[in-house]
Each structure stands twice: as structure tokens, then as C-alpha cells.
Image (cartoon, rainbow, N blue to C red; front, side, top):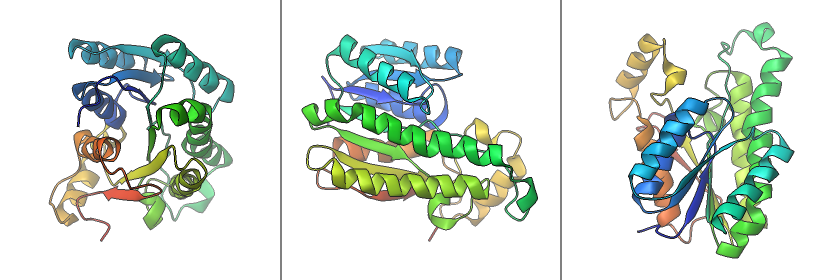
Length: 246
């Protein structure tokens, strides 16, 4: 399905999954807003690649856990493009703390992941809701299989992703029928979060039914399917992990 004429905002889209989603949206014809908080050079490169595909792109700096910055970003998108049709909440934070090391999971770890992964997701959905209602648009939240399994990089991280899945369900109810809200829950994905963890990645691949670890494009493929199709699907979380969770 072509997305020509649509405008999409992808948070945290300078690198990794967000970058893959932004480029795939552009390949379908959508204009894409690339959001970042720290990765400016990467965000600019993503935007330039999108433009090379023949569609419009803008770059906006905003920390998603800052409500004022998020509202200003949404206003800037609408002022520039005149509409907003698609929101992909990809911006995320993590911290790597072994689950059995309870004393090393400090308050700042909790604050960081809850601020970005839960508050930031909610703030962005709330700020975009009125415009998405006008266009009968959709939201896809990037959560994590850790939010279902209780595993992942830390207990705080898995708790934040479980909360994000819950927020997805709540918003699917309150924003219906105009807006569909779903989430995609990846397992381990080969992004910069996995740099220096090659031994872990190899072991994970061997115990995964499909015998490999996900690339960002694997996640993007599911995100695009929920955007361009699945017109009667809302409030759902789709796991993308090669069958490791089953």
C-alpha cells in the first residue's frame, strides 16, 4: 500500500529501528519527520537518505520526556506539512543491570527508563492525538518482548516496556475509532545497544527457532504492516523475535 501524501513522525529515528522505519516509510511515499535528542549527525544522515528517495523530510530535536519540547515539535510538524498521519514511538532508553543484582539497580536507572519509555511515549501520543484524529491516522509503539517476559537488559527496563504495552492498550480504547494504536515488541535486535555483546548475540541466535538475531529491518517490516494494512487491528502487541518467546 502506498503512503504517498501521508506525513509520519518517527521518534528516535537517527539510528537503529527508528532509522529503518523512517526509510521504509519514505520508500512507501510518506514524508518523514526524523526526531532525535542526542544523535544529531545520525538524524541528519537519515533525513538526507529519505530525501534521496524523492520525498520530503525534516529533522526535529526534542526529548520525548519533555512535554513542552514534544508539543513544540508536533506544532512544528503541522505548521510545516499541514498534517500528521502516522506516529511511530521508537525513542527508548535502557540500562544493563543483571536481574539478580538488585542493589545495583539504582533510582536513576528507574527514572531514566520510565521517563523515556513510558512518559515520553505518552507525551508524544497525547500531543499528536488531535492531528491524528483529523487524519484518522495510526500510532505504532516500539515496546519489547521484555515487557511480556520480564527479561531484558534490567528489571527496570522490562517494567517500563510492560507499562508501555499497557499504555498502548489504554490509548487504543480512548483514541478509537479515529486512531488505531498498536505496538511491536522486538526481541534482541542488532543495533548499537548490542555493540560489545557479540558472545551474548551468538548464544541468543543459536537458541532462537529461526536461528538468527533480528535486524532493524525485520522490526520495520512489521511496523509498516500495521500502518499500511491491519485496518481492523488496534490495541495489540506483535512480537518480532524469531520465535524465541514461544
